[in-house]
Length: 524
Image (cartoon, rainbow, N blue to C red; front, side, top):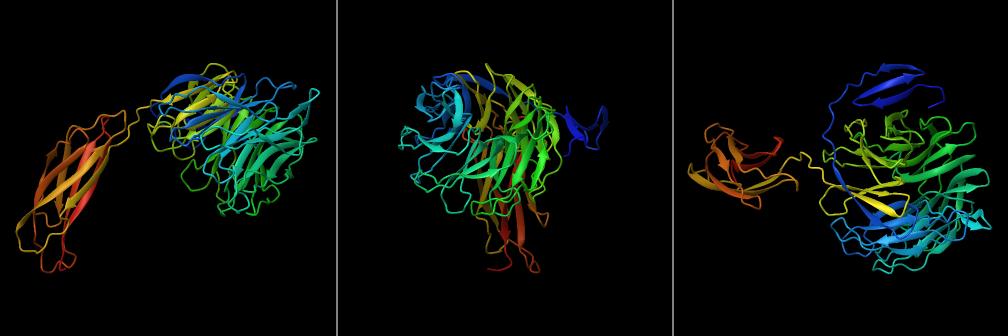
């Protein structure tokens, strides 16, 4: 979008277009609100001040999600380095005491986790803002911490990015050699860009290659196959300092699959107010068309921007949504309300988390807001207590990490399995044959199992069609039998088919069914 062109804003339930001060309704209809998600917050001490980013991974390989936190440790201006803290998970949404590691640089804004040396254990990469010398940012590093395999780590090894500062890190194999590579934002003199460190597969990396994009401040980098050619592309969220006041931008660099990237395909205005920037980027298919879409946190506004992808590497103009509070800082995408549609979660630096329920077509409803103690400096979504529902992890900017356990009881329909024995009736001698139907019904953890299930038989001849009800056992299992006639017409070349259906409502009336077919074939 060019400056001065129309911007589209989304307000509660409706989408409107804004040109200057004129606001008019767009053709999109208003929607009824989705029942709200619900969360219960708990706080875990990271061991130091300045929690800036948190990710979830099973670093000790016990099957339980753990927290890994980047902590600035009051390291702006030198005197001390940042930290990476590891809090091992108990599997129930709680976490143990933090174990901290020096990050090999100062004031980290982000970190990422991946198996860098092929031993099956996740390693940590901390993206340090810079290394301070005599109170000045002199150069910047990423600190690589190799996992011993038990959730403890070797001291961080610094890898120089070849610039003066960095704020974002991503890990993926960008050259197709099966080895993880590092991509980090980097500032070089007055230019911003991306540093690419190709991996050797043993936890070490080659010298950085710079892709500079001009006088921009890269705040967030992500990797995704934007144009669906099987190669990873770069998406960079930034503040463009080439104009005054600055503007927020999103830049797309298509990958060649060999670790190199083409010049920017396009740069999009993020929709932030003048003087702001695009601070964070999340990538997912928001409208179920198979093409990656983008969500951008616009700082210091209370708005997040959504770009719907066209599948060829380009995007529709940004649509802006209220994020719930000022200072939109970080975003994530997950289905938190259980309706199988991606939702948008925004961490607003004012200490508010905004949850925007998705409509499934790339549009979103008005935010539900949740307050956390301290700032909301980063956002991650992961199931940390094994209940199948995404929880929210928020770095609070102080010494704490907030874990918002998802206790939403969504209207999931029951899941029913059904099988018939025998499924073929032979010979077609006209006798009535008992057919046993067995299966299970399962419901969401917070839902109530239906006390009664209904069954019916549809005979394509409309002759034998028993129906009735059954009571599942305490575990959801059921077993019943019906009498079906083993006969078919001589001219019925496809055989006679009995369709048995078992149905059940959820506790809110949303139904589900399963079908099994019994056949009397024409011949065998």
